[in-house]
Image (cartoon, rainbow, N blue to C red; front, top):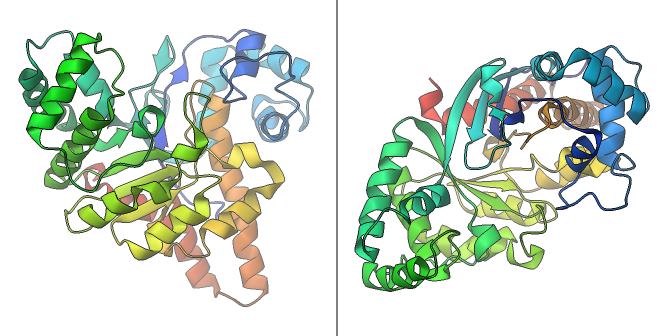
Length: 368
């Protein structure tokens, strides 16, 4: 038993799960951030080992069952039973779901167990408007109105500016005239994928202002992700000017995932009170190094600024692993602190609850 075992989690960033049985190659593709499975055996990885170790027993298999046995048992149970088992065993009470990226057909984790809440991807709001507006000014006005409408039932906002133009977001919002000029070019080019840096910076700043007014955190993807980003452009330190400019705005900024820049993210949380960090996507991928990654994130980050998430997507195994590996590795880290008399048991328990749920509950008042 560790102090993390019974913490009821808030998964403050995840995605929908696939609402059908995946093909074996499709399942293997879910074990990587690569765009294609290629010729490599994706089970032969830290994440593949984790599925066999931690997910297999949930499906009534021995730990370390072979990939073939795992997929056979999963198909025998069917996607609904397997999904229910894996999500329920995660011990998550609230799922905060980014609805801007979902499998087809998809199902929000809260539709299986626990409570589900929407995280609005701000780029999706602008891209949805592109085919309907008649002018650049209409796009800007429509974004402000559309984001407020979507945000009315949401618990947070999220941007993927990291994937489009990188995290070097200017500290000052581009004036409307510059944003309108950028919007004109973007709309003329088809307006399908928001990637103009000036327009995107305007969208991020407007979302920041609206988030501050409504009390909604703004999440930024940073660090590790698929090959649609350039890793050199997604170091959260690139947000320094933006964070300086927004420190008194009233918005809470959450830096998602962060690896291999988790120490940089921890520094930002250290110097900016409105910044929080999570390393949700990271733990299932880094295997036995998860203890060290967690310890490195906690070197500088104030404990009240660290959040739990899984970033689970498509495969419910990823939602499950985010939770079980956080409990396992963070529990071991706290046990080592207890053994070294660096912390007392009451403080360790408060720390575990804070990172697992309490900090997210405070940051997302709409959770109730």
